[in-house]
Length: 221
Image (tube, rainbow, N blue to C red; front, side):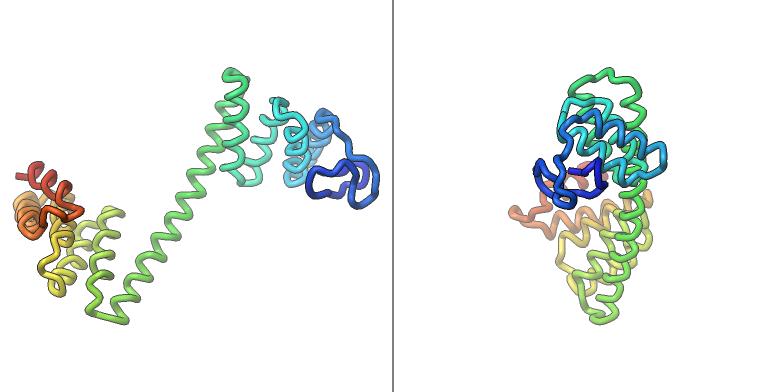
């Protein structure tokens, strides 16, 4: 809880401020008012703390939750903002403006995760390419690079890596299955069919990809 008297924070559910020893206020409206003043002053971190205390004291304080969602979005804590908005909707589905804030928070969350995905994508390729540099016979790295390229829509590059994987593991149904998918993405239907048939011939009844391979063969041929 935040002490409105000395502006310090106390951990846990204490009723007395750990800093000044004074009693902590238990009126959610006082924290709401202080939180809105902090928002107006541009003190977003302090605002989220105060509005968080508001809804902690009264989980049904919808104005507190609504504005906490706004503050969390401004602080780029979009996952938490979405949680607050959903909590408002659960209590009052027609709360004015809530879907706008929820949409904005969801958009911010999307942008954040998209940025993270791009960063992970770069790392993924760098690490797998380093693996094949260290060991040019690492079939798993070649295969993973092929699948990674398929996942990001680079089918032609995927085939480059998959063909290398085939040289070291020519009896892998999974590699031929991935190659079939890459050819299909490139609209090379005859090549896709040939790879899919080879995958089916190499797969056994206990092959974890057997069902997917059969489905692809049926789709292509």
